[in-house]
Image (cartoon, rainbow, N blue to C red):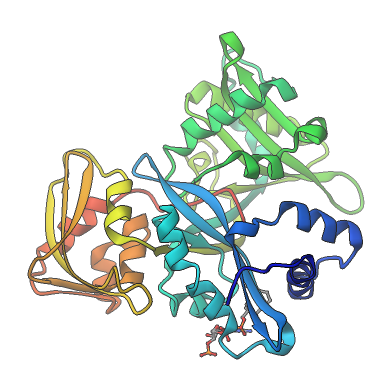
Length: 393
Ligand SMILES: CC(C)(COP(=O)(O)OP(=O)(O)OC[C@H]1O[C@@H](n2cnc3c(N)ncnc32)[C@H](O)[C@@H]1OP(=O)(O)O)[C@@H](O)C(=O)NCCC(=O)NCCS
């Protein structure tokens, strides 16, 4: 297990990815990969000197409790077909944990093609990536936002769009704190004008809200609108942006939006006709338990003190007894305590994101408590709406 060294080894990583994800094995795509791969954040497993499996960890933050937590996001993890079933994907995944810890990436995330693979490595369900589909014309029912209109975004708006994204993302548990390298992948400056981005501007070049979407062709004519994100905090801006999306209803029968499990539009539309055409849950791993607990925010007014006995088969630095204290919106995990609540690092991950409550975990047999009254306390510390995310990485 090591970082690939030669160009040939990096090309072999691309070939393993291409064969695993059905990517084109063309020179142009390989060149793009060679330019963009995070060479200092990749590890490969070799069999007879050949790359057999590899994994890259992308640099992200992720918002929990209003604070950005440094997160390493696996993408991709791939094993060559002829070397599968030998534990190599597990090996390359687990080998990144100490490296992430050294870099201060206190949690990790991924979109699992196999839940069990990553569960065995200490990840657990953390939040949802869901598409909701509804009739475009249903948006005509939402109230007109008194004269406020969106305009087409220009590339010069990009810094203000990023600011707006970050403000909104901090209010949504599970959203990424996107580094520039990720923005460049989503909205490359050179092709900005080819994207459908509309903003509601404010004075001084600021952006109050924006929507980013795609046109997806459909048969025999027209297209559907795929909303990638709609970021706005003020109700009239939210309405102006959804009304703009609705204005495509003569060509686009449906809107398919990356959406939270419970969409706020349900509170505004006259009917509940929303389908869920696709849904996957991303997974989270606690890489450095005390640093992760310190990094996220907590609901104000919650005061908790619970002794935890944590089981972590891959990161011995997390293993053992801890006292969790939450107070004044801050969390501390210190060594010690009586180990009143026992759980695996997997259960801690799903509790940490707010995906599952302590009571749910206890009822699923994934957490045990000597005194049941601690369960509502633990739940309250991490409580919030179901985490979700608009970025598939
Ligand atoms: C998924 C993939 C990375 C697994 O690689 P691998 O080296 O064979 O994985 P491992 O041997 O470490 O498997 C560990 C566990 O993963 C799970 N797993 C592996 N392949 C699986 C499959 N095809 N279906 C369901 N679960 C699978 C099993 O639980 C397995 O444990 P087990 O062998 O005790 O049953 C590989 O099949 C691959 O590259 N697939 C295509 C690309 C892809 O889907 N990548 C993952 C993106 S998140």
